[in-house]
Length: 490
Image (cartoon, rainbow, N blue to C red):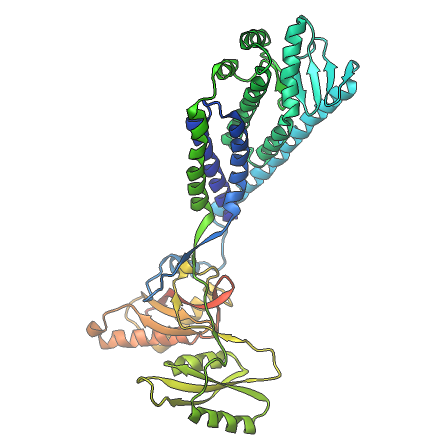
């Protein structure tokens, strides 16, 4: 559930940053055509950018196993409860999700009500004047002039012919430039982000920019002073619908100032400032630090030395139902751990390699050729818990495995007082444990401490086949973990 909360926070931050840039840099300049698309882009970016996953490749390697306390701190608390209880935080998130859904449904209903009222007004109209690209509906003074889609509702009462021409030209500009489509998109956006004041600020900025665009289109052919006087006469404080363009509404003072402005150098170069701003926002919210692609070690790619080739041929002659391969390794014990996990994968021969560095071994392993078997054995690199996309988890749950480890360790050693000792280990790509160790200074270890630590290491290793493997983007990897083991006074 926390994922949708992260999404909402990131979306709100993106919209806030883009609206801040719009308010400070663009809103007062006569780059109104660009501003329209910038505002539409702002809404779309706040929806899409958090969903993007542009990889930011990191080639850093984990040289050592570092202590990891976040997960074990949670695990240590699990053992004190007989069953898991829902936290108050999760309950709060569930209530928030319910409130969000109710809000979405309610705002969606309001939108349909607004559209329904428009449809009723259109169907109930008796004074309809047909034109090629739009239709005029006379309101006879019952409501102010406004437009939606290709319908122009005209309040003709008390107006001269020139005033009517100015109003019609203004509303025709809204219709021709498809401003109603923008409004519908913003209304749908408000359904998703109904709780955010920023969504209403976006809608307000979009409507005002629509008025700038319509005013600009009209004043190309009508005297600006006369048009401004007409605008001042048509100010209305009451409206009947919230999703249409009313002539005379939407910050008349700002519109008059914008009409008086001319396109200057600032209006031409300021839109270019949005390019680095958008790029930074995209990089910040859409690029995620990911590890470089994990290159698995393919089975059978290493050519066996001559002495191993002879052994392989002898094994094939004895067991024709198995496929045999050679592998170069410096850790035979690790190869045996892997072999223990896969019942159909066995190590049939091992020997030191001649002519290689000390500690180099060659092993011959085999698979049953008639079974569906894993085709890749992965490298021994160890990853931190924070680096994986799927953490290793015990098959029977943390409470069960911690209890089993505690019981096993307490059966091997007795202590004079209760204590908790943290043990670190690696969950391998086969689900077994390896590199089990205690964080301590071994030179200062007493005999009793050595017995305790030895018992704990044995207890952890006894759970070698009880773990689901950790993964990075679907690829099994070795993952470092650290958990508490409890020793009780008996």
